[in-house]
Amino acid sequence: MPRPPLDGLIDDLYYLEGAPPYPRLTLPPMPGALLIVNLGEPFRIRAVTDISTGEYADGCVISTPTRAFEFGYPQWTRSVGAHVKPWGLAPFLPMPAAELRDRPVAVEQVWGRAAVASLRDRLSSASGPREMLALFEEELLRRLRETAGLGLVRHTSGVIAATGGTVGIGDLSVAAGVSGTHLARRFKDLVGVTPKRLARTYRFAATVFSIDPAGPVDWSDLAGGAGYFDQAHFGHEFRSFTGLTPTKYVEVRRRFLREHPGHVLDGWPLPVD
Image (cartoon, rainbow, N blue to C red; front, side, top):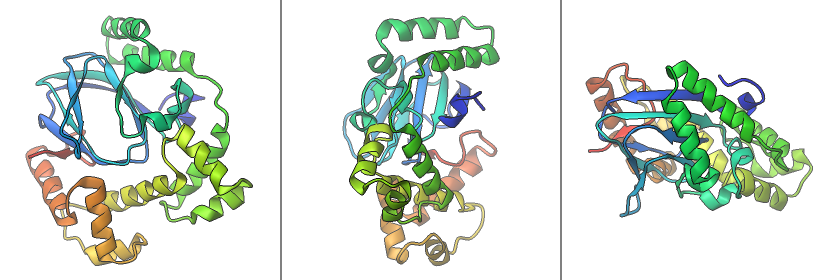
């Protein structure tokens, strides 16, 4: 857990090194952002709906996504990164988060080539993961800046998260004392998506994380408990977020569990056939 005030923006800092469980992994949309500083060979990212693939040597920044991304890894990967809260990327960006929506960019496009090269050199020269994470945390603290509207978006996002995305969006703006248009504009600037879209993502993520792939799944009960209109609506939402049907998703998760039991990446990324 990062120290204050980063703990209000970032869920965790991590160090990743080793051979990935699969050369390609799909990351479905999640209620959060990613900041990765790459220290190994370049990796690739492709939106599952696109043909083209981008290569990232120094790392990447991904604001709260609305579609799945496919990550292609080298045989051995090494990086330092942050799992960022939906609103948490904004204080580190020189542009509105909406400009990065579903468009991963290299870290140097955000912080500049010279600054990122210096950071990567310092991280690579560190004595071990603990020192690397401390250096990364110091860099984030140094780059932290005041961001207009952050309190409003953070509080409203917290309500969305606490209700698993089931709160009425109109109720949010009324409770915050602002217009729906103003709230949506602030969300686009700081999160990259509207409150309604973020709520959809929270609801879907909460539903997926409640699935135990090792056991039987009652899809009708699951859909109803998550507040979906019916099972067909749930299935449509599932395909929209993952590119898979619910039953195919469970098959893929079971494959991961079977082939890599207890792996640190199990739970959200999906192996690509």
